[in-house]
Amino acid sequence: MEVELIAQMIVSGLIIGGFYSLMSIGLSLIFGVTKMVNFAHGEFMMLGMYLTYWVWHFTHADPYMLLLLSMPTLFLFGALVYKALVDRVIGGIDEQQIFLTVGLSTFLQNLALLSWTGTYRTVTTAYSMAILSAGFVTISVPRFLAFICSVILSVAITLFLKFTKTGKAMRATAEDMEAAMLMGIKPRRMFLLSFAIGSALVGGAGTFLVSFYYTWPTIGSIFTLLCFVTVVLGGLGSIVGCMIAGPIIGIVEGLGSLALGAEMKLVVVYAVFVATLLFKPRGLMGKRML
Amino acid sequence: MGSKFKIRKNYLYIAILTALLAFPIVIQDAFLVHIATMIFFYALLASAWNIIGGYCGQFSLGHAAFFGLGAYTSMLLLLYNSVPLWAGMFAGGLVAAACAIMIGLPCFRLRGPYFTLSSIGIAESLRLIFLKYRDFTGGAVGLEIPRFGSNPMIGPYPLPHKFLGDPILYFQFDSKIPYYYFALGMMFIMILITSRIARSKLGYYFLSIKEDQDAAESMGIPTTRYKLISLLISAFFTACGGTYYAMYFRYIDPDFVFALSLSVEIALVAIIGGLGTIFGPVLGAALLVPASEEMRAWLGGTYAGAHLMIYGLILMIAVIIVPEGLWPRLRRLIRAKGWWE
Image 1 (cartoon, one colour):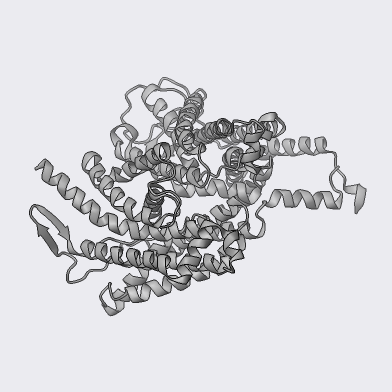
Image 2 (tube, helix red, strand yellow; image 1 turned 90 degrees about the vertical axis):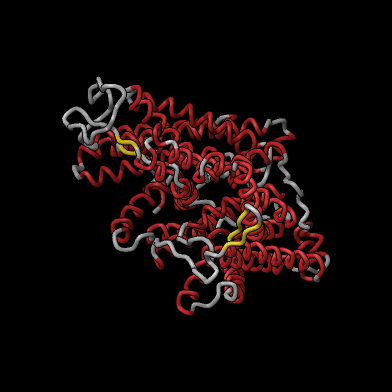
């Protein structure tokens, strides 16, 4: 019984961990290229969740189809946020960069509260309650779909960064901005692109999440914290690091909630964060993006 | 205009202090006294934050952790051991300082956003822990100070010890005026300490870490140790603010005292006022507290979240337009006009 429960937690953790990877990749990409932490990252996901919810609410379209809507919208939103706000403080002093996104996060949270009230909302589909079972381990279908799609998107972004010219330019900017400029790369364009792509990815993550979880205005702050831990464990700015760290965080979270109770899982995750800072501050994969 | 408007600094200080001391006696309006008290309270918190954020350049978004530890330590000491809150304040400060070491040691060796991230994490963890172990901490219900003196005790609160004290010893009054003077005194002490630090070697070490950590290290300054000292001072006084909150409002709960929004609010006051200045946080509090009380009164009832939304907007605009804060701007203006000697 005990062993079965632990096995179940590990499998569930792995599945949700794939989703955490996707959620964090955007944050890591933005940090890697622009060297600033987007404290409003979770709020971008919250917007993706609400967008999916409302379109589903009125059209009853399948949430996975709505990915085609939420990702481009968040891409544009990220670009807009960069152009309107972030561009003014990039290369400025640290406190500007931190508190600009903190302000944005407070603003978006309360804008959501004002517009859509604090009600918990979720998307229900025909397969919402469906379950796959393999032996004594069961997996919820929407979570499994989210896992598969997260892996596909993560691989896609990796291939984009690895093989396309734009992707290479982004990596070059992340590695050495001045050298990249000498090669004729416009860093601000890369910053804009990283913000837009990062937002699109986390918006897509929001679409997956709302199909098996609730959304409410301050949901972002919980997931921002989870993203920080994942990104630091993987190595700030590393994409592959995120892909490895996500499942680890998922499993630790599962086992932690088994040992201490579900409400303490964030505390356990935070303990992983402190342990990372103490023993492996550069993270599992260091600073290299891929 | 010119020299007519020149004021001697010391006279100005004495005039301001006299005005502040006379304020609650002359102005009998309880609401205005409350607003003034809140200004001192936020000025205290923001000044404490300023020691680590403004002078040392390490941005914490988890000062609610220290605030909450201060509030809970003194409150639990009161409820379990009948220790008066003003005495429990020091215990709270020490507990917060211990917590500061736990955050600082892993983070301050590193550069980058680790400290900021970590501070958010610890405040959030403490909130969850205090919510979970409700047998000891009261959980989400919160803790309330039982009243005595002319006030009957409210609510059947189970107390392990009988309260033997009198209202004066336990600092419980019906009037808001004693709380006003207590907050004023705390803010005054904080300003004195800040100005002492700013003019001492310690302050210059802090500034050197903020300006250029490499240069500071090559001058032989042990940067990790000084960041830690700065955080210790900051945490101690933030915790004192937490105890003051418990004393004044007589009720605390984890969702307020450990909230991320509180941490952001503290930082916001300091940033709007001016980082790394002595009077910046005071100016920030004097502007933001009345504004926020007004906004809450106007918008809070009908539009939940509206006043925090405006807060977020103010923060974004402020860091773009006046990143150095309002106090340095104001000081430059006054000097340029020649109103100040």
